[in-house]
Length: 333
Image 1 (cartoon, rainbow, N blue to C red):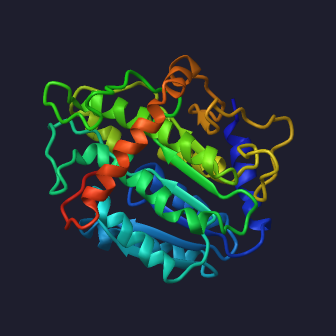
Image 2 (tube, rainbow, N blue to C red):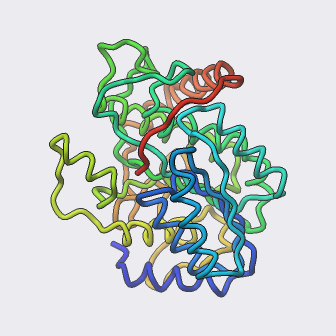
């Protein structure tokens, strides 16, 4: 277990790093992502921050960015209006960043929601709860690879906040859960998590500079958890949103979570070993910052080439979505 005090001390050391870290936050208009953004802006020296907000949340998110500009005027804060429940909107985000930056040091992704009300497909023909938690996240990684691999730090960071280490049964015959008999809000959550881990591992193997963390934060007192309570899901003793954001930033910046020869951000805290990666090359991390082991499932899928099948299917989805229009997205973690 990594203590909250250790997390806070590590995050404070961000101020000692070279200026100008470039970070993109997808899912920071509320919840864990918003808290992580606030902690990053508080501690980083002259950060170059990009965030994404769907049209309905632009005003409130711009108000947040205004407060961040006041608390840390050395940083730059750029808001990109896009709806990440649509895969095609991710390309818009990437194009906006590419016009201003030649690198990205940190990609932080936490957008997503559980579709308690049922499946309501976007105009791209996809379940938006799966799009926000899987398709759009992986599209962002794919499209940002040139900027990530050009990062100023030795090992650029990719953080996906969902359920790393909690992978479960994968419906290999219906990966997008098109059949109504296969879809449920829970099945879509497990499918997104499992496909996400397999695809992120594939990116890690092909891009050895990348540090990729798939984090399961457990219950956190976010607006998403409050909504879940209305549908009978009320886990006891949730982590505070403030702590969730602090721990998320620790995962994104501590050299405890780095590939061999990587690092370049906040040195690993004394007394903690470098975290262990999954067999596929990413960090699957539990709520309190320790590595988890789900090799019983993941190793067999890799052996059978399921990871490649998942990615091949995903590429076809991306191609089909490339020229689609806009739609409305949902809540964020």
